[in-house]
Length: 470
Image (cartoon, rainbow, N blue to C red):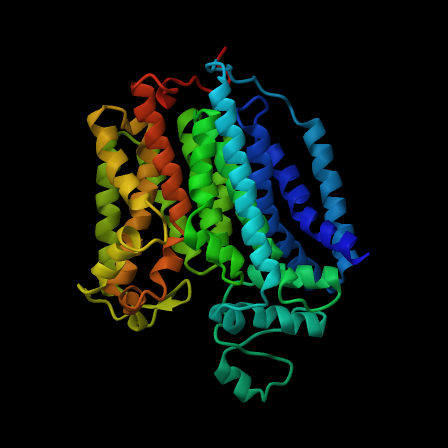
C-alpha cells in the first residue's frame, strides 16, 4: 500500500500540471507531447504546494487523502476544459529530412544515456539521507515540523520566537524563505505516513526529468531537429552540478533554474510566433520563480527589458532600456538604506566593487568542471553566429536581452555586494549559477540552430511560419 501511495504522490504533480499546460499548448506544435509533459511536471511541482497552502488556509488540514481528493477534482475540471477547448488553426508542418539509420542509432543512444543518467542520480538520491547544509538548516526544518504538527504552523524570526517563548511558533536560519520546497518534502512524507529523509527528496528527480523533457519539447517547437534537441538535452542533464543537486537533494536551486528556463523557453517561442499559450506559460513560470526562492523575484524582472525589445522598434527599445537603467541607479542612491526587496535590505548588501571576486566567477565557468564545456560552447557559438549572419534580432532579441539582464544581475551580486565571498570561497557561485545555466544551454541550442541552418543542416527559426498560417 505504501508503494501505491508513493507512486500516486509522484504522478499527481505530472497529471495536475500537464492538464494545465495542455490548455495552453496548441495542437500540432512540434514537440507538443514532450513540452506538455515536461512543463506540466515542473508546473505541477509548484501548483501542488499552492493547493496544500490553500487547503490549510481554509482549515481543511493536510491529510494525504484529502489533498488527493481536491487535486483529483481539479484535474477533472481541467480535463473537461481541455475537451471543450476550441481548436485553433494547426501550424504548417515543416518537412524534415528523413532519419537515416545513423540518426536513429544516435537518437536511441542518447535516449539510453539520458535514462542511465536519471537512473544513476536517482539511485544516489534514495541511497542517501538528507545531507546538504542548507537543506538541514533552512528547508527541511519546516517540512519536519509541519509533518509532526499536522499543519502549517508559523515560522518566525529568532527575536520574535524568543519574545513569545516559542509558544505556537517555530524558527530556523531563514524563516522567511518561500515554502514551496518544504511542502514538496511534506507531500512525500504524508504519502509515506512517516518521515523518510531519502524518499521525501524524490521531487528533485522529478524536477530534473521534467526539465529534460520540457527542454526537448520546447527545443523542437523552436525549430530544432530531434537529434539536435536530444543531444543538447543530454548535455544539460549530464552537467556535474545538476547531477549533484539531484543526488544530494535538499536545495531549491535546481527548481528555480528549471522554472526560469521554462519561462525563457516559452518566452522565446512566443516571441517567434506570438502564440498566446506560450505567452501565458512564460508568465506563469516567471511568476512562479519567487515562490521557490527570493532570488526568483529578480530573475522574473529580467523579462521586462526582454519584452521591451520584442515589442518596440530597436531605437525606442534602447531609449526605454537606458531610461530604466538610469532610474534604477537613481533609486539605489535615493531610497532608504533599510529598504528591503525580496528579503534583502540595501544596507546589508554593502554595495561596492570587489575585484577579487571576478576570478572566482570566471573559474567557476571556465576552469572548474561544474558545467562541463558550457562556457567554451558559448564563447565558440556566439561569434560564429554573429559572423555567419544567423544572429538576428527577430529570432534572438528577446531571450538575449533576458539572459543578458540575468547575467548582469548575477555579476552585480558577486562583484558589488557582500555575497562576493560566495565567489571568493566558491561556496555559492555554483548554486546561483544553476539558476541561469539551463537557460544558457537553451540559448546555445538556439545559436546552434541558426548556425546549422546557414550551413544547410537544419531549419532557420526566422523562416518558420506564424501560427495559423495556411
